[in-house]
Each structure stands twice: as C-alpha cells, then as structure tokens.
Image 1 (cartoon, helix red, strand yellow):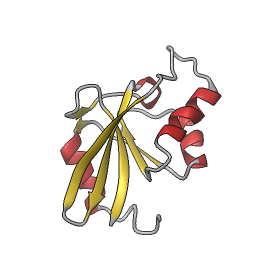
Image 2 (cartoon, rainbow, N blue to C red):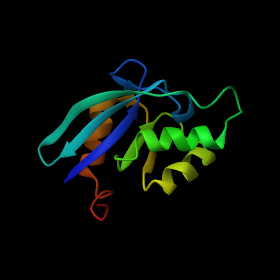
Image 3 (cartoon, helix red, strand yellow):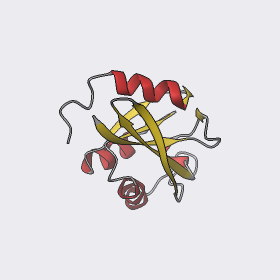
Image 4 (cartoon, rainbow, N blue to C red):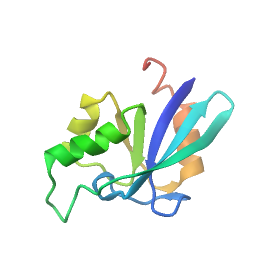
Length: 114
C-alpha cells in the first residue's frame, strides 16, 4: 500500500475541521509499515456558514487531487460530489490523527484504488 491522505486539522494532532472550513490540509502517506507526514497545503476555506461556492469546492478538491482520501470532522454533500469527481474518498472521523490514519491503513478501503 502506498496512498496519500489529506487531513483537515487546525492543530496538527486532531481531526477537528470541516472540509469546507479547512484553512490547510496535512498530507500523509500511508504505507505497509505505518504512515508519515509529507507536507502542509494551505487552502482557501469554502464555507461561510451554510453557504458555499461549487467552484471553490472543486478548487479545494483539486488542491488534494493527488490524494486518494480525505479525513475531516464533517464533509457536506457538495464537497463529496467535488471529491468524487477527483477520485477522492471522503471519511468523517474525529479524534487523534494518528489513530484515524492507522484505522484507514488497517482497513481494506484502498485495496482497489490506484
């Protein structure tokens, strides 16, 4: 397994951001031995309350388009559509980043995704 995952986190330790409100995504690589942090990508937040712009949602998805998954505290239906368009799976989880990434690594969710 060698898969990139984007994580929406404001503090670098917990998953605590809504996809549309994330100011940055932390990019990790999942591999057979575990996971490693690769980089921080700045993002323009999409949502302002309940409003969002579909073009800006697509830009956020494009920013992480080399990733096969994104983990956020919440992901709305418009964001899911934009992510699917870039072949990115959306996962809603909270808690420590390390635990969430290990849960994904141990799952079979990425077995068929290249």
